[in-house]
Length: 120
Image (spheres, rainbow, N blue to C red):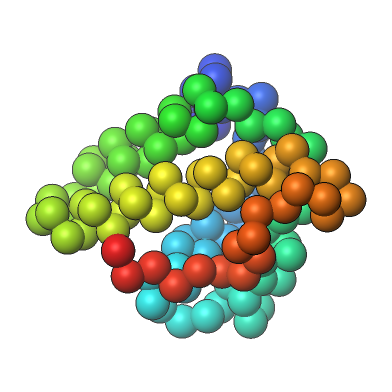
């Protein structure tokens, strides 16, 4: 994603810990330990890097497409239940990110303001 010209304006060259934070967040979303909430700042820590980014629909969709491609490349299960859970969360989560990326001073934030628990 860092090399993608459409997403580079959002991610830049990345930052130390981004992959670890995203991994902890997704693990918590899908029922794993609450490390993101307990140790990494929880949802408020997720809001800050998204606000003001003004994420466009084409950028949101590219993120989803590249995420799914990466999941496929790493052997993510191809069964319908796993695939539906991943894609439905990515669609939801990226729409939350888009809405929050346009919010100012707390106005216009998506109603989801905590790490969701996703069961597909």
